[in-house]
Amino acid sequence: MSIENNIGNKQIFVGPGNWTPPADTLTNDSSRILLQGVDPLPPHNYTGFNTPSFNWMLSAANSYHPDASKGWTVGYYHLGPTRAAGSLSMPDLRCFSMAAVAYYDSTGALVEELEEEFAFTVESTIAPVPVAVSEIKSVSAFEAAVKTQMLTHVRGKGAGTVFIDGLRWNSQYDALPTYVSHAGGPAIDAWPNTNRVYTLGAERFVTGSALMQAPISVRANTTGATISEINITNGRRLFRRFLPKAEAFTKTLLLDGYVHANYVLTAVDSAGRKAFGTPLRTWKPGPRSVVFCGDQYVGHCFRAFLNRLNGHRYSQCQRLRERWHAARARAGGTAFHLGSDTRR
Image (tube, rainbow, N blue to C red; front, side, top):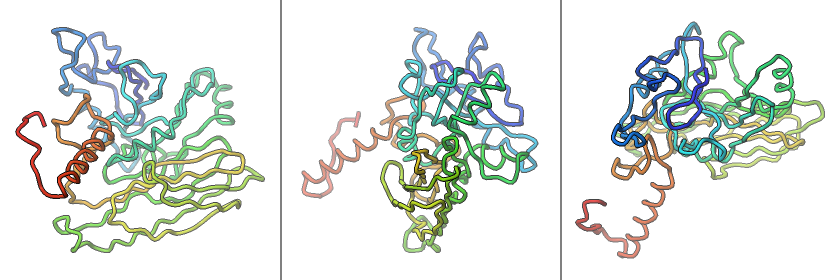
């Protein structure tokens, strides 16, 4: 199901389970999801408090079952610059699992491809599952889309378990084997999901085995094509680059599993077609950074620093850190107080 919410974002609810929105999660006319509560005085402002829709969407995290008979998830699409005024961009979203990095309208035209926005959003604690969304209204349109558009791929056991294997809610314990690729583009056959190094009291001197093996397997998916480039990025930062110029590339990286990172693998073939997907996620349970099953938004700061409803941009936290380090440097690196201003 596709439906707009009351701030203009387009949401999708996918899965074999019962995901019919309850009445109290909808606006008065039942036409939209009531994402943000409306202040009756005046009626065009928002209260900033969660509505019942928040807990209802979050319940999708525990809705699936291994037998694939039930379960559903929450996603967003049309998140680029042409989205509705007042709606949230991908890095600002919260309490969801999948995000459309490519969106095609009902004519088959590409509305947006959001690889850069996805890389920015990956700098959160839990990255969303990247998918391609296309408005299909006929069999012929479906056939054309498969041949020309960006597609969602799931590495799974079979057609009957596609949702459970790669489209379910992506929680703090997951990094689903899902990627998007241009039609005929590279295939990502292996890129691991989640690695966690347990520690005692989150202390680095009592960490367990931190060695993380990260196997890579990528191949060209069109006769005559080769894999020209493979980039692994941690958010927007380049981490590794390979230039195989071969039909297939396999390698096992030996990485430090203790370091918190979200590594996205992007493969490009000789025709310029791309494939990238859910990142390899490595994190250490027990650190000060909060991680919970609705955490797919960028950055964590104290509530006093929030400048947006239902999430805020990573850049706000980044600026605060930069100002702090600059002030500390001016003070000679010694401890100091910011002052008595209670607003800080």
